[in-house]
Amino acid sequence: MKMDVSKIQKVHFIGIGGIGLSAIARMMLMEGKTVTGSELSPGLVTEVLSDAGATIFEGHAEENLTEDTDLVIYTIAVPDDNPEYRKAKDLDISMMTYPEALGALSKGKYAIAVAGTHGKTTTTGMIAQVMLEAGRDPSVVIGSFLKGYKSNFLAGKSDLLIAESCEYRRSFLHMNPNILVITNIEEEHLDYYTDLKDIQSAFIELVKKIPEDGYLVCNPKDPHVMPVVKEAFCHIVDYTMEKLFFELQVPGEHNVENAKAAIAVTHLLDVPRESITETLTRFSGTWRRADRLGETKKGALVYDDYAHHPDEVKTTLKGFKERFSDKKIVVAFQPHLYSRTKILFNDFVNAFAYADEIIILPIYAAREKEDETINAVMLRDALSKKNPKTLYIPDYYELEQHLDTEYGRGDLIITMGAGPINQVAENLTVWQKET
Image 1: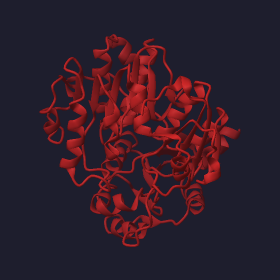
Image 2: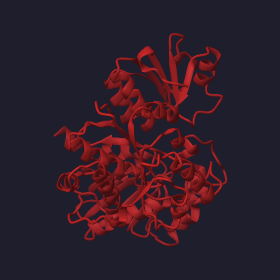
Image 3: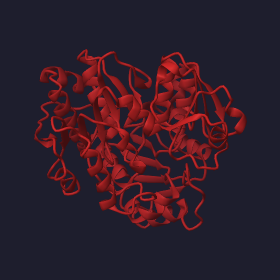
């Protein structure tokens, strides 16, 4: 359906705590709409929305949705038997998925879409920061909070839209990009895709939407990206040809590659290179991406990171080891989804080589039902064969107490995962905010 924002007075969001859905909710609030939404696990995202004027319900229930609602926007992870989804259908309220809403937002804009299995949030953040500081006034939709803005949506007055675009369930196909960045393509979301070739087919569909005078910014020599590039009819820009003559604040070689992609895009948009360099030199990341929160009372450094795929875990830990070679790296990891943990089990077992000590928490199920054939203890047991300093801790409180008492100066603690494990890191450092 088409979204005519001017005619909408009240919008309800099912799964409003999702980082993408919350960006559209923020846009609606900025437009002066009445916003309500439900979320199973409220956190910082819903807290920020509540402060901005949204009404947030914990859990999903029919009574959360009222008849005077003009539009329901929902995450694609919502099942058909969700009570709010069913009620919206019964009341014949207009409905859109988050990808459909983002696609509607992109129409009439010069859209820069950032896609890829890993690195898209940081790359989107880098591009956005450069364009904002260059005075280009873009609209931005990102899968995290931009530091300095405490928002995952910015409403610009220009025709530029910079949007992180996810491949899950081919949702990014609602975008109409003029410039498309592909950071990389790996096996991911295998609860939906059958294999790497299936994932590549989705990227091929997206690439075919780029106009002939548009640009595909990628590493065309990457063997996983090559089949996609062959189907492109637009200009191809190899971001690996860019050079960095400065040091980034965000650790890791993967962030060097993200920065190269950002340089390539912003240079295409005629931002002077000295301006690009000045901004990226100061870029300190986004929320939950190598995010430094502070120290524990005993002096251990505390970082939080959203990594939840084996490649992300390995690359992120490698970056920390390179930057903090003098410190003991302690990672507390919360696996995300039964299906991902099961399908990529062996990859996870090999992903923690750069950690000195590993702590595994129970699997965060998110949108999935429990699968009794896989659990976090199995992962702990397999990891213990490679690193005897691997523990299983069953809950957040016990983890917080363990990290707070066992580690101090000379240690680096990283909480890691797509679930709410970041709350542990925030609790470990909250004393600094209070003093």
